[in-house]
Length: 91
Image 1 (cartoon, one colour):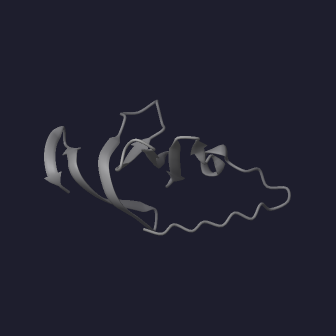
Image 2: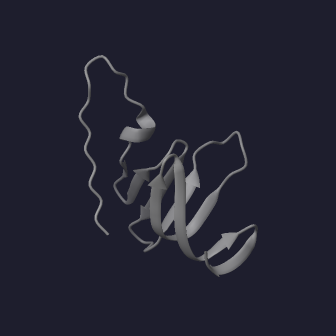
């Protein structure tokens, strides 16, 4: 997987910390569509997609293998994950 991102700050525009935060020393982070982000740890092989919005129902999708964002929609491919509160092999 190859990820390329460009960030050219514009003068006078306020940057949103959600999109500029890169994660921590042992955690990789890719912002998707606010409030959703993909994170991974140095000790975990898989990515986890989750919502950072604490005011609504939390969404966490472990085992993410592929992510595509198209016209404001996030498509995920995950293995050994949870869907509708049930363990599934792939979805």
